[in-house]
Image 1 (tube, rainbow, N blue to C red):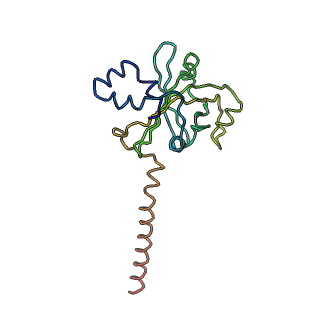
Image 2: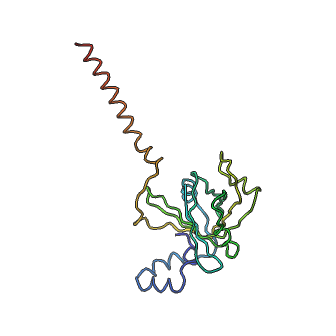
Image 3: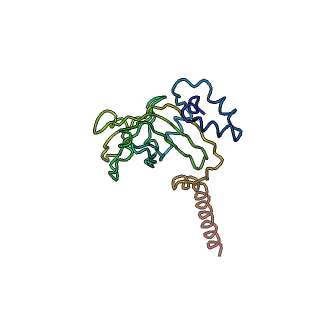
Length: 206
């Protein structure tokens, strides 16, 4: 757990529940000394670069939270530096709920999951939205994708936390399944060639 994650999310009621169920002492140690925003390290940077989707939560002026799924090619969520991440916002269903929510409260929560590796990373931060073409949209555009980019999201990281993997059900993408099958396909091809050679040898011996 990053040092100051707990200082942002462990409210008095949360702490009371931790005390009640016996985990408060453990989390109090993790929470101690939280004074500055967390810095993304090499593990976080590598993990983010491999993600092809994540969930982002915001809160609207009505007080209701809203969670949105974002997807794209690996690396579409980019690490700018050790305290900044961002992504390009391509044309979608035009509901603009996440963007609208950020107009009244710029706090965001992200969760990214590696299902095969049973790992997940949570990030808390403050988001800026840059509308229209500009330096940020150029910088965050996915290479080789000419789809219209309507805006750029730049998130200043305040804290992050690696979650317990206990209840993550392993799931695999089509690409991951294809990669796993390559050795079996190669072995099958080799066996088929061997069978063809054996059939040819049998035919020649008749």
